[in-house]
Image 1 (spheres, rainbow, N blue to C red):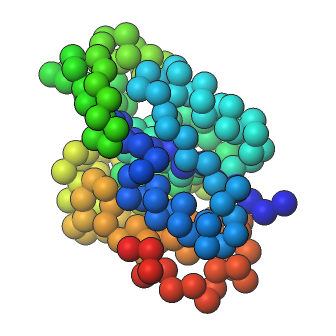
Image 2 (image 1 turned 135 degrees about the horizontal axis):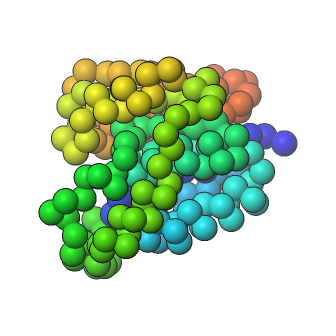
Length: 203
């Protein structure tokens, strides 16, 4: 069976974010749409993790692809289930970064409003991984001009993993389409399926 991918979006994001749509378009082009899951995650960490656990149970051994807060979730799940993960500008210890952000939040894509509470932050803290057991299972893609997170935090935490640090960019990760061949190879999707594709078409 062809390898599967579980994409984990970030804080106040959704399956309609640019990277998610690019990955969905590519997997559809490859005829592998059923091997990709991009769930719309609940804003509460415990409910989001429950959703992701269900997806992992259905997919078996998916490659986790996590962006921002999704990278934090992916790290927890990779350690819990022994999975490989691609982390894109991942959040490191996000529970320490919500000072001043408690209160009403609005999802950038859906318009949904919800309340960020100290209970949410405590639930995030429960997912903290102190050390990776298998750094070789991770690829970590960082851009230095990330306006939301300091890339050096992830550079330090994931220093033993395969780091790809690119100057410039932003938190959304510019040039994601050009990195898709690396993602597919890491997922174990046969090169014969995608070697002739023009990936610039997914920009």
